[in-house]
Length: 284
Image 1: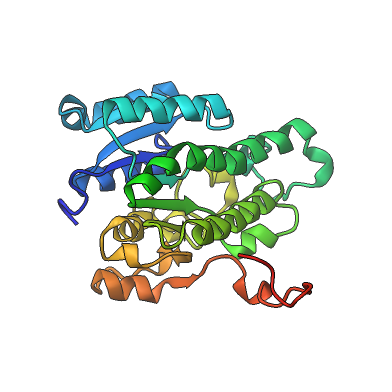
Image 2 (image 1 turned 90 degrees about the vertical axis):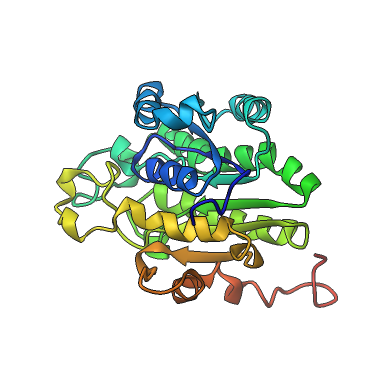
């Protein structure tokens, strides 16, 4: 994929975290200019220090931003446009994990009385509204230019539906539904929307040591990169409204075959095809 994204401008949210750092590395390696957004200014500094050559060449900028706030998202996209151009690619990766409630949340599951309204609101604000804010701030230029790639990081359906895994599960389910709706809304206008998920526990700080899971058996954060780069390529641009399970990507295959092997429908299309609607079909 070296040079495949030459001239493209990408925004990555949650860029200083485990998966986010891998997205930044992969996109830079593919030739893109990258704007790395994160709420943690210190970790952004470490990210910039690790990519000093890209920073010096003007190919990487780091921007502290709280994506839970519309004004900060709008301002961040404006700064990206001024400094890099675009954006052409948006990777909605930023999220709050269950560890903010308790570090042993995977072995001692969280019950509703432990979730304060302010915690619920924060999960919704970051994991759902933040992605919507970033999409709204970024997509106008993509639609005007007739080229754009939006890749959203949700989670497995098991996690979405799991008992005692709130607020993370249901908020990610809302994000999946939003992704499906945006894929339909932007279809035929040069902008694709797809979802990429690890498929299982991933070796990042979101899975704390207290989980008891063998870290060697977890999905590697770097596994998320190949499907994202492929979706951002010209070949991948033919696909819209799908989800890709990165843990099932077979690196021994060419990219198109590997993508086919880990592709599934976005959301729940089998549940959406038969609404009880006057006249038989709602407007599209």
